[in-house]
Amino acid sequence: MADLKRQLGLLDATMINVGTIIASAIFIVPSVIALDLGGSLPTILVWVVGGAVSLLGALSAAELGAAMPDAGGIYVYLSRAYGPLWGYLYGWSSGVVINPASIAAIALGFATYVGFFVPLGDGGIKAVAVASIVGLTVLNSLGVRLGAVTQNVLTLTKIGLVIVLIVVGFALPGGSVANLAPLWSAAPLGKQIASFGVALVAVLWAYDGWIEITYVGSEVKDPERNMPRSIILSTFIAIALYCLVTASFAYVLSPAKMGASSLVASDAAKVTLGAAGAALVAVAIVTATLGSNKGIVLTAARVPYAMARDGLLPRWLRTIIFSRTWSWRSSCSTACRAARSSCCAARSPAWCAPTRRGAIPSRPSSSFSSRCGCCTTPPGSSRWTWR
Image (cartoon, rainbow, N blue to C red; front, side, top):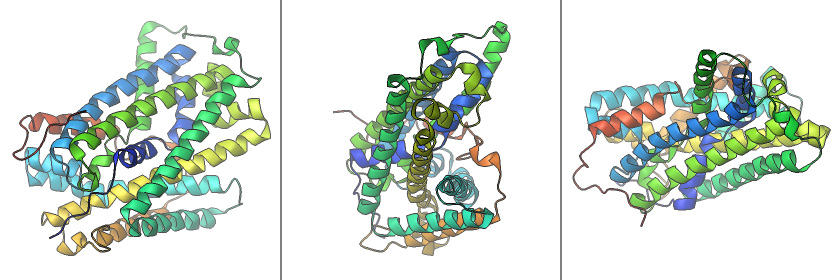
């Protein structure tokens, strides 16, 4: 049976990854880690350490993606490393629970911030969330190329808005070097180390998503080069943005104020831009969550598609239409489960909790364990190269 066409270039692959990594966490997590660490330097340093840990996983994913550029990502790696049982267990949990729930949670977060501009009740938030899921699925149905262009626009807009927040924080009146004090917490060293570890959990959640492009590996052009490049470039972009935006918040506020704020990005923007700052942050979060969900809706459908291709799910899920550009049945089944989750969800601050894409260690540990099981490059596959 014909496979999906290879239509995604380096820019497309990188923007899918960056768009998935950077969602609402960049506007929330700096407050969480400032509360834990109590000093401006460790608040920034934890992003560097988290980025380094994520980069180790990204390097593993880069080699796996180049060696096995097939639809399915981690499902494929686990199946080939340990056998179909482990791939099936991951694919089932991912396709039935993790991905639909993640899409639903981010869609609800998107709808909540749409409510900043248009008053929405509980029913309205759920309706907007479902509409966004349906809309993104329909958009993907129009072809991977159009979907990739949309993803590029959303991600570049998101990056631009984050850069605006960074520049505004450092350039406009309101910020001061004095706000960076204290540089280090006065707590005992043991407590600082423990707090750093707790903060690192939230940071690793914020970096989650660097492996996303591997789920559409069968649609990436020249995967031996573009897969590793996109994975590593997207991780470095996220590291730079996270460190700079956190430094900007610390420059405008103080670590104590950051830790006490539940809306740290909005509070920092208000200091420099006034009431317009809150609107800017709301626009940034709406764009960030929509762009993140756009990438997840595209990639999540490839897991049930790959399982159906391997005979582990009903064969009708692997049906491809529109000149081999859309696995429509697997996409629709994922969208239906996500929409149902949105309708059943209770309004809760849990949308902002570090639960996106399942347990935090799932990405790095899956990549490392699969890499250990795939030390020998499979026959007919390629090692990745930067040339």
